Every structure is written in structure tokens, then in C-alpha cells.
Length: 406
Image (cartoon, rainbow, N blue to C red):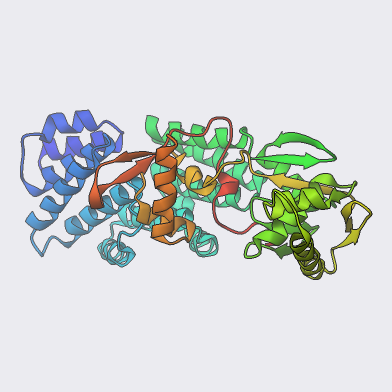
């Protein structure tokens, strides 16, 4: 390998893509094409980067298996940055196996961490946690150790485990400083800010206040009956009843929880749960049926008692009732939460990350675009969607993945 290629590689490792391009910008040999591709990716031109890496991979001979595998890993990293979550994972795994077999442990570890980050994005938390535990982070170079700890922190945040998240972020900051790469240090600092940003709202006793992630964890481990609007569940100190597939029942229990310890009138329940502007006898009959279903769903943790004006929620074991509400009441909040990371997403990637149908996501994106809350970039299959971050809150609780006791 000649000196210019070596110098360009060192520049890229230090986070200096312009310095790398100065050395190889006019060269078309495979190593130079690969380095140019990585440099363009660091500069944010993913389409050009992908084209350069594919050209490099074609030019490397079949005997240069390690070089080809490195191109595959670099392309997978670009796909992840571009939120192309449908990129074939089996191709990345084959490249990882090749790199590991040839002793390139650093790039094999990079491939493994790219797969972990993809699993984190799509909500495969159990699989990601198991795979992460099989990696010896102490043997990794500082840059990869930073990536490792960021994945660990992301898992802890999604699990609402703030102490684990803080410990992982402190380790990530130490590793990023050892790597001396400004972009990595900035990424860790941004992750730290999530812990200091409101993650949800607490509605209790007629009052409302914002909660940090640490406050959410404390609430979920308290003795209160928590109506969790972020996961559509009712939680009682370790036990949980999911109402994600029963939206009417969840709407009823949220109204009852907001009114507690007072009752909620029948008119309020009909208006908010059924969206009935003028209630008639058929609405009242349906309300009685749904309240009966709610009683059966909450059996063992709460009862719903009729009053003169309406109904009141009666917890059986909990000391108090609280509503854990989303940081903002926003239609299509889960999509906005994904777009709030500042990256550009395809509709297929959003559908995969949220577990929804692509047509459903596309209709939601069209609504958000019409309201000025999402922006189209490109057209046809190359179209991507982005949105400015919603100010003042973290999206952790809007994304998929189970909470403790879920």
C-alpha cells in the first residue's frame, strides 16, 4: 500500500475526510475509490459514497476478499446512516465472517456493531442485548468502544434504566476522548443531552408536569397505578395490562385516571372515548358495554365503579393513580420521533422501525408534509423524509420496544 493511501486512511480514522480527499481525490484505483467513498460518506453525500464503494468493490479482484468485505461494511454503515434499514443483513454477516477469518478484528467488530445499531432502531431489543453481551468491549479500539457503549446506552434508555445509561455514556465519553474524533465526542454529548430533556408528562391529581427519563423510571417503579399512554398499558408495581389493541378501553381508562380521585362524567367519557358530540341512548348503551369490558381487562389491579354522574377508577393495590403521557400530544408522534433524530428516512425504513404497513406510514407522511411537519427529499424510490427535531423533548418513549414489566 502506497504512502498516500496510508495517509488518507489515517485521516479518515481521525475524522478528517477533506484531508483524505486531498490525497486520493484524483485517483481511480480500487483502494483510492474506497477511501473516497468513505470520505464522501463522512461529508454526508451518501449517494456518491455508495457509488464509489460499489465501483471499488467491482475493481478489487476476487482474491482480494478482505478489501471487498471492507467495502461491504462501509456500504452497510452508509445504509444505516441513510436509514436504509432494508439493507440485506446477511451480506453484512458474510463480510463480517470473512474479515474475522482473515484476522481483521477491528472491521469485523465494526460490522457487528452496525448490525446491533440496526436492531436497536427496529426495536429488536432482546436480540441486541444478547449480542452486545457476547462482545468483549475492552479489546476494542477507542472508536469502536465508543460505538459499543453508545449501543449499550441506547438499550438502557429504551429499557428506561437511567443508571445503566449514565454509566454507558460515561464510558463512551472516555473512549471518544481517547479516540480524539470530534464527531464521536459530539455524538456522545448529544446522547447525554437526552437524559436532561423531558421524556414524558405526568398527569396526577389534576396537575401536570414534565418528567425526565429518570423520573419516568421512578414512576414506573412506584406504588402508583400508572396509565401509560406511551405504551398503551396500565401498570401496577410490576404487573401490566396491555390495551394496545383495544384503543377504546385505553381511552376510557385514561379519562378515568385523569379525573381520579374524582369520577368522570358519562358525557366526558363519551366525548373523549367515542368522540360523540351529542350522546344518545345508543352511545350510553355502548358505554356500559365498554366499561364492563374494561372491568374485566383490569381485573386484579383496579375496578371501575358507577357513580351518579359517571364512573370512578378504584385501584385495588396501588397508592394513587397517575397518567404517563407523551411529551407532546401529536398525531403520528411515533413517525415524528424517528424523524426527530435529524436523519433522512425512507417510508419503508419507517414502516420497518415502527412495525406498521408501508402504505399506512406513507399516508401519515403525506399528512405531516401537508401540515409542514415533514419534508420530502428526492422522488420515487430515492425519496427520503426528514423533519426538524421537535424542541424540548426526547423521543425515547415514542419508539417501539418493551418497558420493564411489559
